[in-house]
Length: 183
Image 1: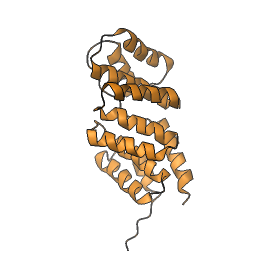
Image 2: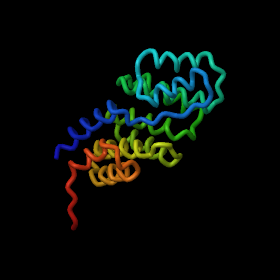
Image 3: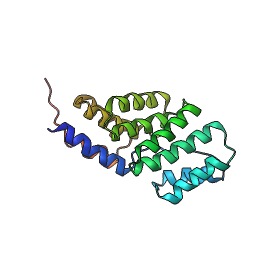
Image 4: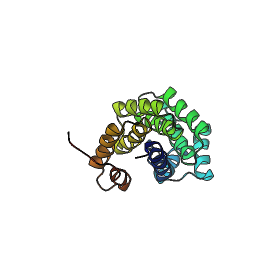
């Protein structure tokens, strides 16, 4: 099995398929619209502009401001704009370091950049802090493990993603590549 190629291919699937966890923002303003767009999988310029307007103009509490940075970062990440996404995730972590989604999404960005060790560390930290969609974090962490040639850990994380969300086809498809043997 060519793990490096498979991990790279799976990473492209994950990034394109939206294995990113948005952060809920409450209220009725642009920050909420930004969240709704990120949650719906939008990453177009108009959706990102709403996030930027919310950050520039709305009076947001720290957690909502951090969440808006995460949501805008997700949009950038979906387009493969790693440096700007990194800046948004860093801003979110600086404002609210206990928001697990900020760490998980920065970890997914690192995996997309093939910085697997950094991605693994961030995703693991995000999981420890708690996230609302842990199956996405386990999926992205499995990609990091594959990038590090740790197929056993990758298998278990894909399995955990399926356990948490049995109807999600991405981890199911990845598990088909594995053969389990007992010693």
